Amino acid sequence: MPWQKKDYVYLLRSFIVALTVNGLIGILQVLGWHFRDLLGQGPIGLAQTHITFSMMLASGLLLLMFVIREKTLFWSPRIALGIFILLLWQLMFTIGRTGQAVYFILALLVLLWMFPRYRVAGTIAGFVLAGIALLSPVLRSRWIQAVYDVYLFFNGWVITSVGLRLVYAHSALQMFAEHPFLGVGAGQFRTSYYDLARRGLEPKLPPVVDSMIGPNNSFLAYLSELGLFGFIPLVILIGYLGVRAWRHSDPLLRYVQVVTWLWFVLGSFADTFIWLEGQAIPFAILMAVQYGQEMSNSA
Image 1 (spheres, rainbow, N blue to C red):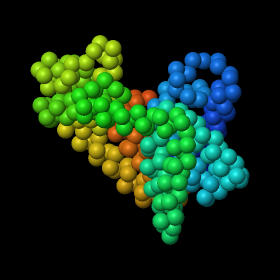
Image 2 (cartoon, rainbow, N blue to C red):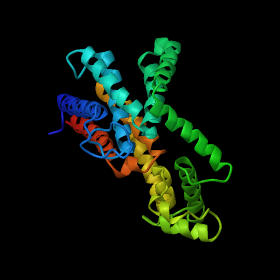
Image 3 (cartoon, rainbow, N blue to C red):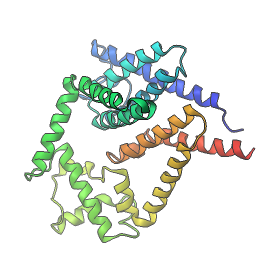
Image 4 (cartoon, rainbow, N blue to C red):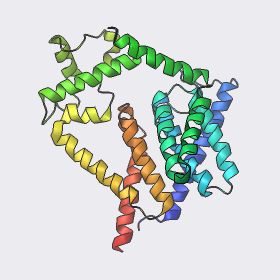
């Protein structure tokens, strides 16, 4: 039998509860409970990497924005608001720029979507929220470093977090230009990069960054490794899911699908971790909602 709405509500509620428990563990870590080495990633609780965790936080915060307004999932909007503040604090004090950027971009869009009569107020609220976030010294220093990395890149120094991403993005486009239809082959990005560097088309990198060589953009990964024959079906699938999500009749499930779709697509421009690790799970759930709707309609 296809899932009913109550099944999805239970799943979403469990997701928020799990994030809340992890947030409480993050508070204990700040208070001195060092049961594991956080590797300078901030109060990430039981999560393994700041990149995937920041995306999970962004997803939870976006869901809570709807919950606070519509009074769903939890018994009181005050509970949802308290959890929202906890997760926002955790996002502000971890070093995951991907989730931070995705959340603040989509939060502004969500505010404009949920309150169409107050677009100016919604826009101002979005900027105020971003301004409050910048009070975090961790978040502020990470984004200042990102700007400085871009400055260094354009002045010839590429061995930085952002600089390497720009190099890999450029090399992915080079691979696509040379192999537009079938790409360089799945898993062949690093080998192809060395070939480009040997020919002087990309900078030669020190061995210390060897394990980091990759497209750092999920769409460029498909384009460079699988070419148009792999990329076009992917775009069609994602486009189809986006259209179907927008047309869903139930307000909660429509919101979850549309926001998850935007969250997944936007995050995929920033890092391949979005597809390689836990972020594929919410996208699979999105597809399951579509399937459940198809089954219900056919019944």
